[in-house]
Image 1 (cartoon, one colour):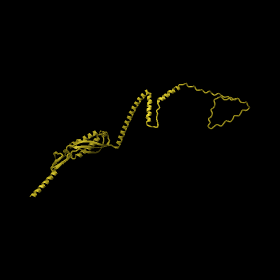
Image 2 (cartoon, helix red, strand yellow; image 1 turned 120 degrees about the vertical axis):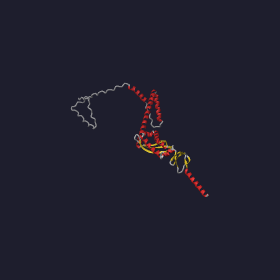
Image 3 (tube, helix red, strand yellow; image 1 turned 30 degrees about the vertical axis):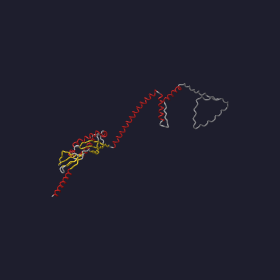
Image 4 (cartoon, helix red, strand yellow; image 1 turned 90 degrees about the horizontal axis):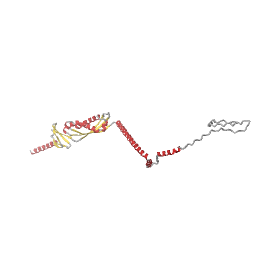
Length: 310
């Protein structure tokens, strides 16, 4: 009899221990427990720590209350200015109402992910390419509002949404690179032109000051020579002062003002008369003419009067 009583007590204790082990639940600090009794939601949400549920009657579902970081898959879209882009983002959210996250939506993580992808494609179609590249803060705020509106009814709060990367076609990248290069070249030319203008003004002021003091030009010449010689060059470029040329020009003017001598006029050639020869009965034969040279220049006929014959 006593033995049967002991066995019954041990069996009851074992059953109680098994029931307690099945009913005992531990809720962590970053979790909240939602209890469903016979399929109906209990009003009290179990906080962190030790709690008990009725096995077979109540069911405890734990909901993570931490901030969840979820990447949004890259979405292909066409911007408002007809440029094909590929944009990916990241979303930060957390559960603020554990009961709504369990009751209102089947899987709040999957729902938030799908809503983020849909909103990202929508925001791409409403924006220009320049906005996606330079005005991301405004797009992030608009994307956050689009996702947060339906997520409030799920007990989920969208903490932040960030666009990570915008992928462009290679042709568009090359076009943007050429545009940036042209803009930088334009700015460089404007800066050079401005520098030339300022330098010309300063040079004009310096020339005005040097015109009042001629010795300043010589000092500037010596400074240039010193600057060139400091480079240890084998060739020395020495500028020739313009004032020296002017001095030489003034020195030549008195010489040009002297009287110029009249050139001697050549006298016309007088006709020559052959000396008288002794009279003879027969004329003396003239020697035969010499053969002309092949390249000889023919003699010009003399304009003088013919010689008188006796």
